[in-house]
Length: 324
Image (cartoon, rainbow, N blue to C red; front, side, top):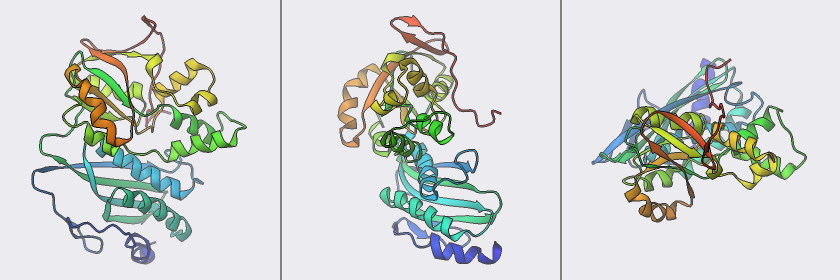
């Protein structure tokens, strides 16, 4: 692939439309030269997606590209950051130009939407995998973290939960539906999650802690609890479910359990002190995203799932990247 590498880079990755003023030197040299605005901190996140683990080998490369970039942008959203730059390391079995063309179509469509410029990366030969590093800006000292929560804070999530898991179960053939419209909707929600960039920015100064839901709420909320040294009571009847998920999984308990454990949702889970709850709805007005209060933090440890005042004996877990 080495003989074709630079041709591929020139043909596809240099054809982006985004050209930011804070990029002094982009693709074509050994390094990019970038300028961080005064008064801002640089937020950086890296994720890898591997064929057969994060997406099927025959998946539409347009959707794969969207999913890969969206999952990284979601990390910036969770910190309250504004996306700016991205680098891409792509490993392919061979120079498949049809795949690469479609991949770039999905990648640059989302990058253009969020004004994110590709500033570098690498291509090499090997099993299909995608590694993306995103960079964003957050005002000095205003980044949302996992460790700022306190007992008594309220637990919120954006959007609805569980649709991504439903779409994945369709992809894997674990469950089926004769409703083609429902199937298409759930598959799209699995592949084309929208990172909550505006919501994350709106939460600065309001949320005490935040993260994105990538491994399942039941798992990811545990990271906030661990970093903040707290426990949480979660009202399962308050978990927001879409009409499509309830149609797909008519058993209410199973639908709720799916929503609690579903990975790759890329919604935000965040905590809000009592004195900031009044400001929350106003702050989120322009984000176009709903937020639902699902519980409250307490002293102690662990997550208690509660329904009608009774603790539930549900043994749930999120996604484990190294599970067999």
